[in-house]
Amino acid sequence: CECGVSVTRSVRQAGQPLVPPEPVCCAARAQDKDFQELIGVPQSTVATMADLAEHGIPVMNCPKAKNPKAKKIAPTVDAAASAGAFEAMMNAVVGGAKKGRLHEACRKNPSTVQELVAALKNKPRDLAIHLPDHAPGYIVNVTTNSAEALKSGKKVTPFPCHYQDKFKPPVQPVEQGTARMDNSWAATRDDGKVRVCGIADMNGKPFFILEGARLPDVAAFPLGGGFYPQALGAKGHVHRGRWTFFHTQLKPTLRPTASPPAIGTFLTGVTATVYMDGLKLDLKVGPGALPVA
Image (cartoon, rainbow, N blue to C red; front, side, top):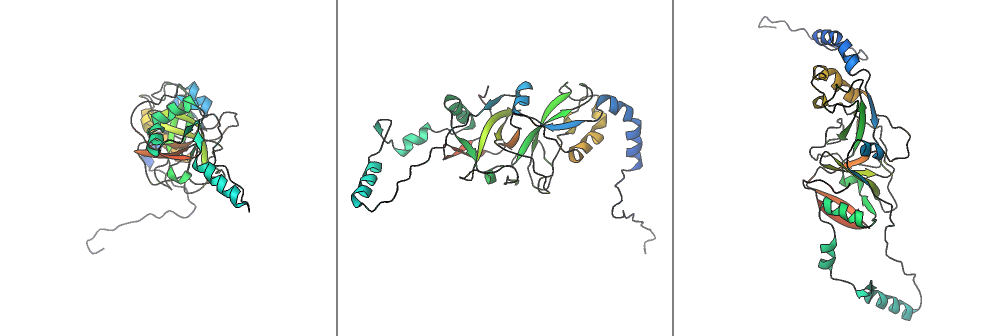
């Protein structure tokens, strides 16, 4: 170099493990005994709907209901029968009264997530979503060796995992990004929708649990274990670097259970699109607890 400064560049060979700087390794070795006593070998498992209730998280089951579909009229060569079928539809009555006006029907439909939950509690409805309208997410149970490791004061604590952007690990559900669900998360019905089998209120964020949902093992959605540094307590804060390492290196596991796994979508946007009994609804997602209890 003309300025008299020599620059040396260290190149890591392909396949060679990435080694942290020596000061970081020294600190980890010095703190290892305390880490093992406090945290040990942490575990991350996907929570179930039953787990959420045990943790005191408000959650409700959405009973399965039939999706009302319009009756099909079989074609016929009888012109009089065809005319009669159309006349019957034209003069159709609902519940003994003539069909109401559109604006009257719209007033009866939920306009917020809170109103949707109230409607589901009054009467079983078919609630479903269109996967590309929502971002994927799930809830995990993180287990530590001591209850003093986390702020929750428990050995087993649930944490949310929300995908804000594709090809990035999940984060806590704060805002809506560009990530959207696809068929790798759940199989769709004949109508292209996925049924919502449960609704939870996770720290003020509505969470829809989807029927038959699964954790995909694809590059677009790298799985995260739910190890957030801000969850550590006063004694565990010194281990935040090692703790965060597990978030991207320890994948959550699914255990066989009759209760549906907490895999679905967090409603983090201003509005959310859902389908109730086949009717499309654009709901406002505002502050306030959900009446799911």
